[in-house]
Length: 172
Image 1 (cartoon, rainbow, N blue to C red):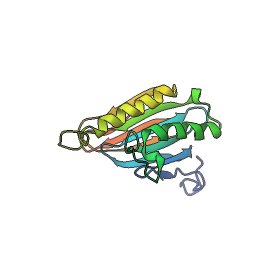
Image 2: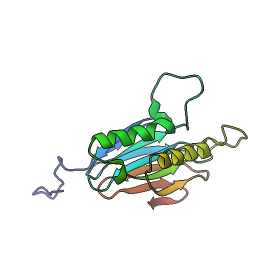
Image 3: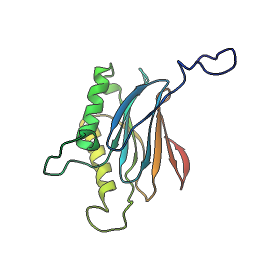
């Protein structure tokens, strides 16, 4: 980044936060960064290319859609979102062999028995399954427990910052 004479950053080069909403995915390149807030049982899945310094983030809500197909955004489901991110990054010049993954979330946010209580665990399980099927290495994770997280993927370094009230900031 270059500095202007007054000491401020050149606005054309200042990092822009790209926010990834619930059930969405987004792409960005250095110097920008990707962020998703308030992950509970949802999982943030990040893919990063260290050569081109660009990446993607998905805010996965569920492992797979219900048996009855619902219209809407397929990015909310792990079985679709990860493949879509890898394909779009490949189309942007990143072969799958260069991609690395980091994940966060999958908390047990609900004090109940049954399917609702295990949604975070099932999300993490499906995310890991899809990454393995695509042969994308999972370099780091901050998953489970019972607390919400906000995450940022910094595309210049590939560092995933995970913020929580319980643990402060972790660098993955």
